[in-house]
Every structure is written in structure tokens, then in C-alpha cells.
Length: 44
Image (cartoon, rainbow, N blue to C red; front, top):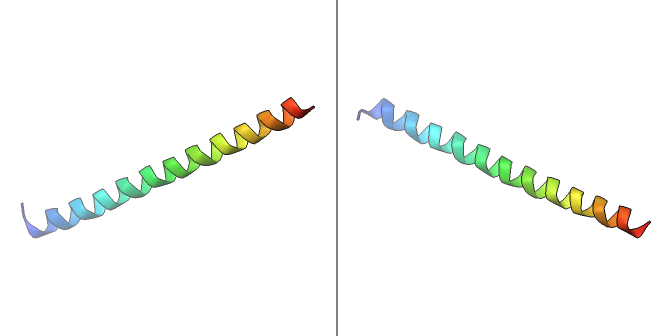
């Protein structure tokens, strides 16, 4: 593997990790908002 392939792989791994992190944050945010909505509806 040459130098440029190593750089490309590092950048690709970074982008993948960033997307996974974004997905996790979005998942947590969605779950939180859904649960709050359920609690508000149950309160009525």
C-alpha cells in the first residue's frame, strides 16, 4: 500500500466514523423527542 492509499484510507475512516456518530446522535434525539411526545399525550 502506498502513501496516498494510506492517506485516503485514513480520511475515509474518519468520514465513516463521523457519519456513525451523526447517526447515533440523530437516533438519540429522535428517541428522546418521541418519548417526550408519548408522555405529553399520555398526560392528557
